[in-house]
Amino acid sequence: MREFLEIRDKILESDNIVVVSHVNPDGDAIGSGLALTLGLRKIGKKVRFILQDKYPDNISYLKDLKSIEQYDETKEYDFNLVICVDGATDDRLGATKALLKNRFVINFDHHISNTMYGDLNCVTEISSTSELIYKFLKFCGIEIDIDMAEALYTGLVNDTGNFTHNNVTTETFEMASELKRVGVDNSKIVREFFNTKTLAAIKLLGKAMYDMEYSEEKKLVYYFMSRAELDRFNGRKEDTEGIVERLIALKEAEVSLFLREDKVGVIKGSMRSKHDVDVNEIASIFNGGGHRKAAGFTSELPAEEIIKIVLEKL
Ligand code: AMP
Ligand code: MN
Ligand code: MN
Image 1 (cartoon, rainbow, N blue to C red):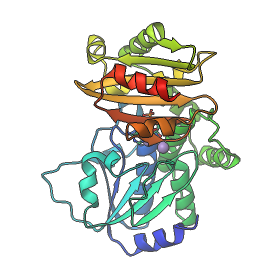
Image 2 (tube, helix red, strand yellow; image 1 turned 120 degrees about the vertical axis):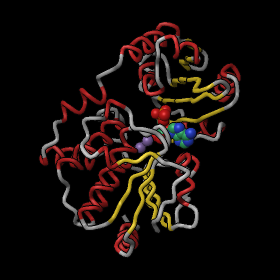
Image 3 (spheres, helix red, strand yellow; image 1 turned 90 degrees about the vertical axis):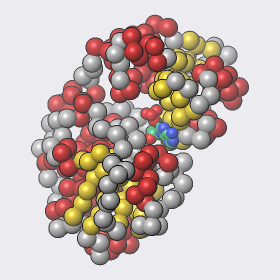
Image 4 (spheres, rainbow, N blue to C red; image 1 turned 180 degrees about the horizontal axis):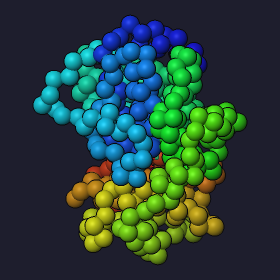
């Protein structure tokens, strides 16, 4: 990667570094951020990993999660370099966006919608930010230990759907192979991270699968989950993770749309595409983004309105 040299030099001349990532952090945000934090500490850097939101429970097998701090706006943070991982825009960083002000910003990401908000941007089409960080750590000659390897493997599993998406390349498999050599228990990670669900998550998935709607004309399968439904099962945001991927299993469907009411008047949207439809483009109508085949957005429009706009666009 062309930018690696400049980024490494910038890191080498900085002593106090902060790593940040996006709101509601997923396996790639945490995996890439944690591996980078641990790696830079190994070469003697003082590094803090700061997030707006707490990490999800299903990732608690990762060691050193205590390294992750929750952002506190009343605190003063003393550092000079901030490294953003897996954040397509500075707004996606949530409250931690404030940490970018008047600081040197490095932006490591893999979303095509990335706005290049850093002073140094390393943004490329690759399976995950974890794969990008893996390459960077190797470039710097930093040895990947088991704790870093587990974090990176979690990022890979998260963003490739456990190696099922077409963002997997031979290099992705080579990375997985090396992480396995370091000692990663792939079966444990997939079981705990991917295949273990709370009762609420299973009920909510069942509800969405049972009551989903399908537009034959537009080949869109969609479902809106209201706050009341989430509350009925005591569901948290993370309990709906993966529903959008299950909806698109419908044989005839080309695109899936899952809407979740995060709070009254605020809807989080997730979209997936099976073949040619570019859902990044559709998400951008709502100021969101992501990738061609997986994208998301947040909107204050009513659910019916969002569905209408998506159907019109398809
Ligand atoms: P999700 O549907 O939340 O799993 O997200 C699918 C992809 O779109 C992921 O790569 C996210 O990082 C990205 N994404 C989700 N929400 C947004 C947003 N509001 N803006 C930009 N990218 C997003
Ligand atoms: Mn992410
Ligand atoms: Mn990612």
